[in-house]
Image (cartoon, rainbow, N blue to C red):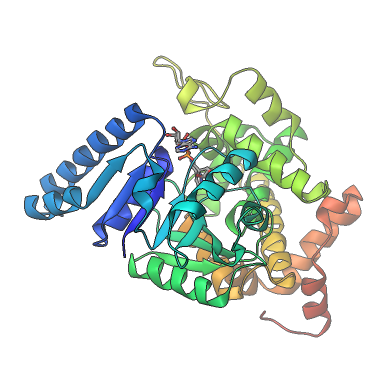
Length: 384
Ligand code: NAI
């Protein structure tokens, strides 16, 4: 099957590389010739690095590059079996583009979007045949991150879902199926990792470095929340939080933080701007955490139960299966364990008690335990 990728930016170029490495002929299209030239040069660099590391032969590298057709014209998608769109995150632009794509491709061509935040149902609504729309959400960098969320819209047929899932599985990715709901799995369930860490700082319980120390050293996360937000970029992370909050009709659980907004507004975007929560300029000294084990454990427990509650609520609302929710967090954001399995390990009663204590102390809806958690504990169950 010939694979079309629209948009040769960060995500499109990565997705095209994955498809070509899996043996497909790939048509990579972007409006901007400079972006295409860069994608082509970057691919060559990446493949050369793989050759140097002994992970790829130069013949294989040449084969991969030969499978590419680069173009600025969507007409070149005509004989593709699937198009994955990875252009700017604007619904009106995506609508125009999908209508144009439908007029070019064959009737059974799958039309997929890599959107992070737009509803798939809404993207597909402009199609004459919306049953072929699907979300195929890769993580950055696409060639390295194993997870791909597959998101059928209400219009999508099961045949399209199966075809898309089988295809991405054949690219050696870990696919998870999820409902067309805000943030899908990862960007929804991960919110408290940032939100609760920001809240803990705002209450003056600990500084950035101490919160990061607790989450890495005591909880085993690869990066602390502040290091990670600086890595992602406070502009991007804040925008995702705000969009999830708005899409959930202002559910207080997803409320954005003023601390992050002010950092964003000040241009403290993180690594890319030289300063975020930390200072990345050459002579800057990284702050030392206060390694108080009692405070550290309080921080870990509070963020962890909020994450677990989010995962449990996603299960409660059938956003995805238990297996897929856990696979998503381990493979999409490198969590040390799946949150549902972790909650079972800590015990559901422990999770509920911690949440109830927070809920009683603050009286905020943000801390309400998921009905599923309450139900299971009431029934004396220890697993989901
Ligand atoms: P980007 O800005 O790096 O690339 C977008 C590309 O699309 C640009 O090269 C632009 O020239 C091109 N483009 C814009 N309008 C076009 C059109 N009408 N026709 C053809 N090309 C057009 O953006 P990025 O980061 O790659 O994001 C693309 C999509 O992937 C967005 O929907 C985003 O939400 C999603 N996404 C982004 C992730 C990330 O970490 N950057 C992760 C997962 C999904």
